Amino acid sequence: MYSEKPWLKHYDEKIGESTKIGEISLTDLLLNSVKEYGPKTAITFYNKTFSFNEVYGISEKYAASLHSIGFKQGDRLAIMLPNTPHYIFSLFSASRLGGIGVQVNPMYVEREIEHVLKDSGAEYMVVLDLIYPRVKQIQAKTNLKHIIVVGLQQQKIPLTEGDFYFDDFIQIQAEAPPRVELNPAEDIAMLQYTGGTTGVSKGVMLTHRNLIANIEQIYDFMFRAIEFPDNPKIMSVLPMFHIYGLTCNVFLGFKAGCNQIVLPRFDVQEVVEKVKREQPFQFSGVPTMYVALNSHPNLEDYGFDKVSYFNSGGAAMPIEQLHLFEKRTGCNLCEGYGLSEASPTTHFNPPFRERNVGSIGIPLPSLEAKIIKETENGVVEVPVGDVGELVVKGPQVMKGYWNRPEATEEVLKDGWLHTGDMARMDEDGYFYIVDRKKDMIIASGYNVYPREIEEVLYQHEAIQEVIVVGVPDTYRGETVKAFVTLKAGKTATEEEIILFTKPLLAPYKVPKFVEIRDELPKTAVGKLLRRALRDEEVARSH
Image (cartoon, rainbow, N blue to C red; front, side, top):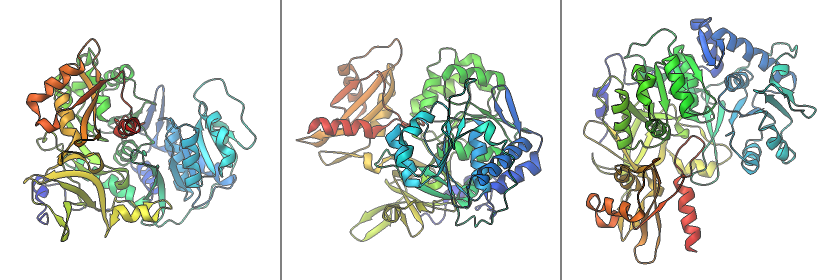
């Protein structure tokens, strides 16, 4: 049914149906960028810049020091940092030794850090100085031997013997480590821990080939068909510990010779001022970032109209917010789609075609995608326009979950990755996410997709953010509840909000309950966290 791949007709003539993927490692990615872009700026971090040559030089010193304290091929280096150049040095240094980078969210508390360290078996770690005490609290319960500390403050905190400050560590007069033979298709480059929004956090095993493939796919799709300046500036404010920021900013930046304007965290005022000063070529964000930018009273004064490309991913972009951002900036905002298990990008709205609002776009080169459902006769592809589960197959799909063969078998079947997202495809080959399979609400036997109700609620002039969940109901099985935050200076009652939805939704979809809160729970990357509220409601009902 999808064998014709209707999306191919939208490809630019410079883009092929498949991407040529070199059998190379992340170390080769860095070496290739040094060869091509050498003295050009790779990273701008406040008042400091690093050329591609300098990134390579520091990473080599770092790798030599790691090797001198026992780090070897297959070892894991846990990285728990905000966005800094040291994050990038750490990844390339681990790769240089044939090691595995372990992504650790810097906002994790002791329990969560302990889980990732125990699960990954990491013996080496690099952390921010402010986080160091948190790690020391649980170190004895893990395999951790050495901690490298990145200090961004002038005053240094005392360290335990066997731990090092980054600046001192790379000055160790160590011999250059031997070159490591890697099999890019089999050797793991990174463990990307899932956000844990659907249960315990699992380590996604991404090989060198997985990551290189996705970089090449995005480059083919995004950069081959458009003109871009020499050493273009890109905003790197998406968290690097999240695969979206890492692949689409950091690694793609090295492939394309970009100057990454690195910010440790998303602060609205700092971001708008940085955009005004740097005039970046590209800006990638998650929906909550764009919602926050829309709330800035003087967004029009900061030169956002000079940015060539805005990308959004990580979660569904509310259509009202998308239109508002485009109206205020005069620019197109292109949505894409991906997941940690796919390195992450699978679909994107092509920047060289008219964008389909509400769509995640079309599949990247070398990717197969289809929408399926289970029937009495087994799994079948659904007709065009019907809703089912999105499954994908391509070179960027993970090797599996670290030490979790059963969990791997649940989502990887005959090479197809089952995303758990309900979607549909239109006749033109554009895909649309309807909702998470597990988030679907069944009220009185009807399927209710939270995203549809959220889109309606976003049209209310007072509402800033929304999460819709199903709550237990003795009569209907489940019923609809909306949690909302209000825009600054705006007011609305729960009754008013419910009345607002009635003309716009079928009766079984209208929220029975609305709760107004000061803030809604979010994941570290800024994705609204539906599960936390659903769990809260289930606990309350018992």
